[in-house]
Length: 344
Image 1 (cartoon, rainbow, N blue to C red):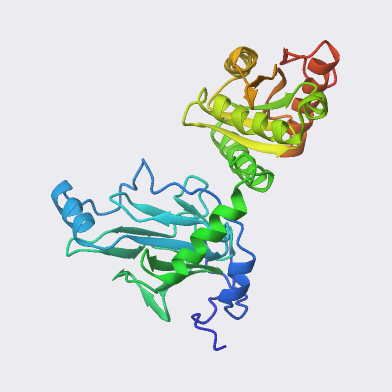
Image 2 (cartoon, rainbow, N blue to C red; image 1 turned 120 degrees about the vertical axis):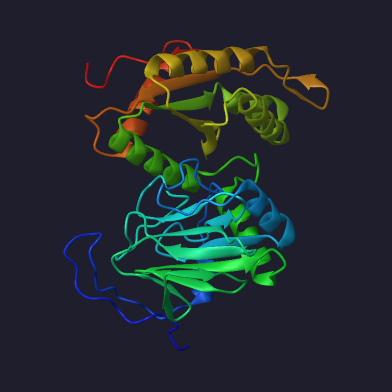
């Protein structure tokens, strides 16, 4: 296959300086098979001040008059990540706060933006990036987008697709199957790991509080042995629904493994996370879990840990939450443990 990418750029001085990028041949099938996407935000609440602003009437006309477009990350970020284009700016770059965060070489912190176009549709605009933004094979400053366009930023590639494009339907299918646990429909461990890494980066960079709760169903083997595995499966499905209804939109829950679940509480210090955990514990204890008209008593134990500057990686936060979960189990189950700190 002929490589559709533009030629490489000059050598780098730093991440935002021009850099030579190795460009392997573009292989859509490989990108599809390797897709490991997540649920992306559809824009940013803090548009760049340098970005041209359009009137509310202009944006409304654009959105109402055009078929829905989406962008999909093919390379250089979270492969398979899909973002719907709406009335918000979609910033792309190395900034973790970007709507489409990219990690590839040659990508500037705020590299390019997709924005509603006054004449209808959407426009791609370069944000004075070091290595430029290429639409198909052409370097562009501002250019209108259409279904099927390929956008290259450094070693990153995204593709623009309409909802009516059969290729987009395939991406959506891969998107859902790659990030969802098939039993509970909760995000899976793979997505949890990616989500936690991103939130830790934000906590580290901006000094924001971040807590992790590990939730484990008490004596789950007994549930399976007494009521059968189908009953155990139903308990896990119902547990996700019950707990998810207690969470705020900013809080994230995933199936961590077996009967264990993880909750990431962003913008939440340890005291708030402990209150959240206690509320979840009490809610589960009160809930009438049933299977085939049989009541099944269910309780959970929860370990809570907060990210601190002393940690170097996500595994340390998970390890501390796991230690505290084990202590909650050891101390009698159906309880929350949020301290003491590791090593004390």
